[in-house]
Each structure stands twice: as C-alpha cells, then as structure tokens.
Length: 79
Image (cartoon, rainbow, N blue to C red; front, side, top):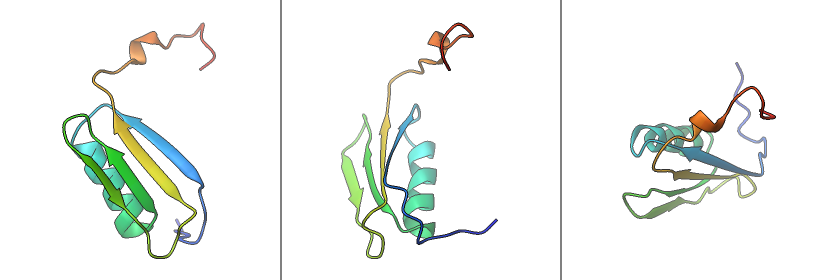
C-alpha cells in the first residue's frame, strides 16, 4: 500500500458511536500520518481542532452519537 499525503480528499464527515477509541484512532491517522485538518466534537467533552501545516484542502470532521442506529438498516432500504 502506498500513502499519498498530497492527495486532497475535500471534506469528510465521520459519525462514530464510541467516545474514546474511534476519536483516538482517527485523530492519529489523519493528523500524525496524513497531516490533514482535523476537527472533532465529542458529546462528552469539548471541541478540538488540528490545523495542518501542509494540506489546507483536506478536512476531516468526527462527531459521535449516543446510540447506534444500525437497527434501522434492512434489506428493503437502499443501503
């Protein structure tokens, strides 16, 4: 696998259920490895922001929800 740090991804939104592990993993990947702009809003804590020094056009947003809504997905929906 080759990591292309110069690839612009635009704006990406991640909605996660957890309040620690998902934030930690996504933050490490998108800030330490890829050096993208990163913003997180955790329902249990404050808003955090990381601004990239090299890639201003790639922005990742992460928020978490209180409970999973996976039970609403079934074969009759368009998923």
